[in-house]
Image (cartoon, rainbow, N blue to C red; front, side):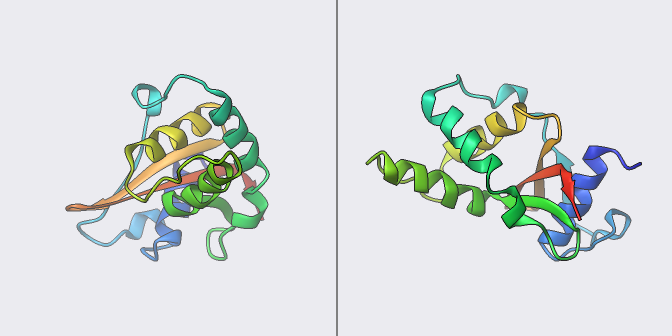
Length: 135
């Protein structure tokens, strides 16, 4: 059985169109598992609600190629902004540092969740992968 980090790397590569096989990542691209301990913010009511909201969305985010549930930072941001709007709070824009912290918090709540960074030079993308949900 594949390790969660390997499943997550394959799902990230497939999501960003790099490859469905993590042994064939194009040269120059780096896919790494983020150990998010230093990124995790203090728990708040919003983060608890966000974690619950994200948990309900995994089945809507299963990849056609990887067959694994995954959510990019932009997908994650859409769900976070839904909650912020419900609470009449200002929405967050892409690139806001809080997004990676929120993703790290959600990942820390479930051992099946892996936060992955996909990068090439200055181009950096994040994806949260739920290795427990596959088809």
